[in-house]
Length: 365
Ligand SMILES: Nc1ncnc2c1ncn2[C@@H]1O[C@H](COP(=O)(O)OP(=O)(O)OP(=O)(O)O)[C@@H](O)[C@H]1O
Ligand SMILES: [Mg+2]
Image 1 (cartoon, rainbow, N blue to C red):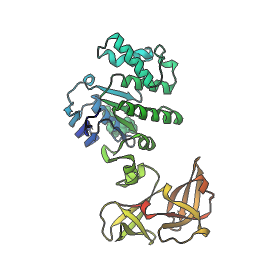
Image 2: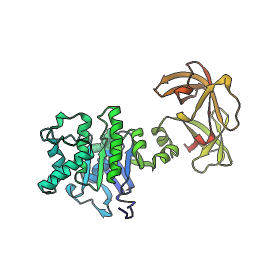
Image 3: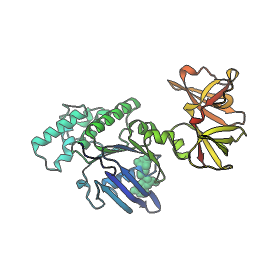
Image 4: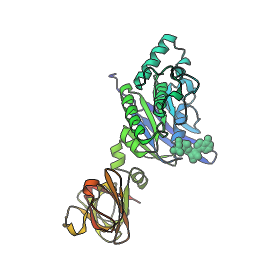
């Protein structure tokens, strides 16, 4: 397909959903580019499922419009929206064969028997389960059943694939396999996909675009790198990984950096996210993975680095990495994660933690 991709293949405009007093989704504007995989990421209750259900036609918006391919679909009945849907609790029909489960959506599109057979077989091949058509769902593993649900969703060649936490019932290893499989399948088919999750690693690893939501609002949207490295506020920085937040006051601009005074009166350099003036109260954010530990006794002063001294309060081994909680002299506790190879430190050790200013970001409070 050489045609120009539609940047607003799916479009929500001023969409809102109220349940009595509860506003599940608040005046939301969102555009999903054609052929992309977009994740809706956010904590429980932030409105992810509600947004998906409105697109699917299972819920009516209180306000606003929804468009697919430029056409307003608010009044289009569910079966005419041409969507493939996989919900977490949207189980297969237990008494039907796998073939009939996958063929389900086609029956309502009055496909001929021969075409139906061809399409079902192709869909089963795409999810790498050819030849299971005669079995019943109970004769497949959990991961295989979820692949059948995927086959059932793609067999109708949907305009948009909607997945609401499709992997949450699977164990961690299987989740990772399925994540990769969905990612590959989505790219092979080029189908526009909206994937709901509250797992940040899942969102970062598979998305073209991540939409971070909280309380029915979009907090930030962008590529995984953008939302992770340039989080626009405390919530996003906190939700997308292990972040340290340190209160500070703005001193002055120094080249590309901002000089700030930390709560223990020490100066520090950081990247400003936005415009600031002297005296502004801010928060400095540092990811736990960016703090490099060393023994205090080995510390060599380095003008290029921001440095913190403290004592290790807690150490936990996490496989490839070690997670530390380090208490500074002013009682502030910071979280650092270092590779095992560089992690001989034990509880009670006096350490320094250094970080380049480029990995310290200043946010408004
Ligand atoms: N049918 C309903 N009636 C009343 N309130 C509802 C209904 N459905 C959802 N809500 C409320 O709307 C808000 C958003 O719910 P939603 O299911 O969209 O959240 P979510 O982001 O999918 O959460 P989770 O990660 O737990 O699935 C919640 O406060 C929820 O209690
Ligand atoms: Mg939900």
